[in-house]
Image 1 (cartoon, rainbow, N blue to C red):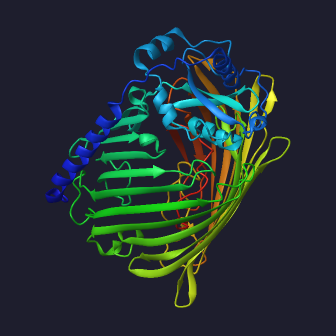
Image 2 (tube, helix red, strand yellow):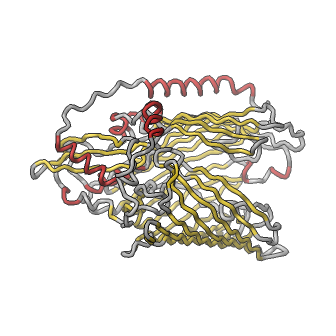
Image 3 (cartoon, rainbow, N blue to C red):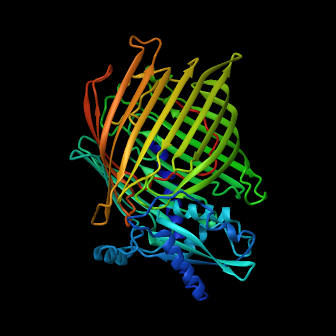
Length: 600
C-alpha cells in the first residue's frame, strides 16, 4: 500500500519519541507535603471553596475577574500554597454530597492532580510584586485545563506589605469513554485518561470496527503532556488509521503527527508560538477500484512564533502590541491521478509566509450559565485589531496576501453579552485584488433570567460572507455546522447570510449526578450565486433537544439534538439526529493567534 517503503524508520522514530515522552512524564519524583501550611492558609482554602461552590438558588452576576484581588496590588508575594477540592463534594450545592458510588470510584480509580503539576501551570511566583490582573489570568488558565473543573487563587494578607496565595482547584474524574461511528455496522469507541497518574498528561486510544473495511479494525492513539518542564507549552504526538487528527483529503487517511503549542497565557507574558508536523497518506481500506480511489500522500510543516510588547506597563494598562510570523508548507509528495482533482485546492501544495500585527486589550467577566451548567465561565470583553501580510502559493499560483480584522465584545449593566467582528482579506495579482473575502459576524447572549430555580438564556447569532473577484477559491458553501443534518454539494455562491436563534433552559433537575438543560432553536442560511440557474437558495433548520453534564466526569456537555430541515431547492425535507459529546465548552481563548489566512 501507499508508502510502505518509507514507513518503517519513521514509525520507529515516532514511537521511540512517544515512549520517551511517556517515560519522562511518568517517572517524576513524588511530591512531599508542604509542612508550612498555617491556619491562615487553611482559612484561605475554606474561603476558596466558598468562592467555587454555588447553590441551586444562585443569582447569576457578572463579576470582574479582578474584583476580589485589586486591594492587594503592589504587595510582595511571600508563599504560594496548593490545595485541591475533592470529588466527594459538589461545587453546585455545598450542602449536597456526591453519591457513594462516585466517592468509591474516585478513591479507587482517580489520581488527584499532583501539587507539582499545578505549580507547573503557574506563572505567578514568590517574591514577585502582586499583580491582580496576572493572578486572575493564571486562575483562568488553570480553569481551562481539561482535568480541572474550577479554580480560585485566594489572597491572605500578611502584615501590610506581603501576601500569601492559596491555589484551590477542583478536579474532574479524568477517565472517559465515548462512542461514535455508525451502529451497528461501524461502531467507534474512544477510551482516555486526561490526567494520567495525576501528572497532567492525556493518553487516548480509539478503535473502529467496520464491516466492508480492510482491515476491519482501525485505530487512533495520541499522547499529550501539558506544560512540559513548567514551560506552559504542551506537546502532543499521535498516530491514526481512521482519519482522526490532521486530514485534508476525502479518502480514509493514515497519519502520524507531532504538535507543540505555547499560548500567550497573559498580556504580561512575552512569547507565544507553535510547531505542527505530520505525514499523511490515503489508504484504500474500502477496496475501491483504481479509477475511483484517490491515491495521494502529503506532509505538513507549520511553525509560528510571536513577541508581546508592553509587558512592563502599569498593571491596569492591558493595551498590548503583538508581532507574529508564520511559515507553513503543505507539500504533496503524490497527487491523485484523476484529472478532475488536479486543480482542486485540497489536493495541491499550500505554501505561505505570513506576518501579523495585533493590537489588543482584553479582560474577563466571571459568570455562570452561559454555555455551562453552573461552573465558573470566563467571558472575554475588549478590542482586537489585526493586520496581516505575506506571500502564498496555491495551485501553482504565487500571490502576495493581505488582510485586516476587528473584533469587539462587551457586557452591559443588565448582564447581556455582545460580540461583533469584521474581517477582510485577499490576494494581489496583475495589479488587482482577487479572491477577496469579506466576513462579518455578531453574537448576542441575553442575561440569565431567574425563574425560581430555573435559569433561561437566549443566543442570537448572525454572519455575512461575500467573495469578490473569485479566481482560485471555491465559492462559499452552506455547511452542516450551520444547518445540522444538511449536506448538498451544489449549494454555494458568492454571498452567504446566516442567522441563528437558540434558547436554553437550565433546570434544577438532577439524576445520578447529571444536570439537564432542554433547548430549542431555529437557523436560516441563504446563498446568492449570480451565474446559477437558481441564484437565491434558502435553507432552514428547526432543532430541539437536551444537554446534560455531570460535574464529576470529564465528558463535558453531552447534547442530544433533533433537527428538521424543510424541503428546499437542493434537498427534500429530512430529520437528523445528532449526539455530540464535547470535553469542554470554553469561551476564554488565548489573547492572540497564529497568523492565518481568511477562509470562506
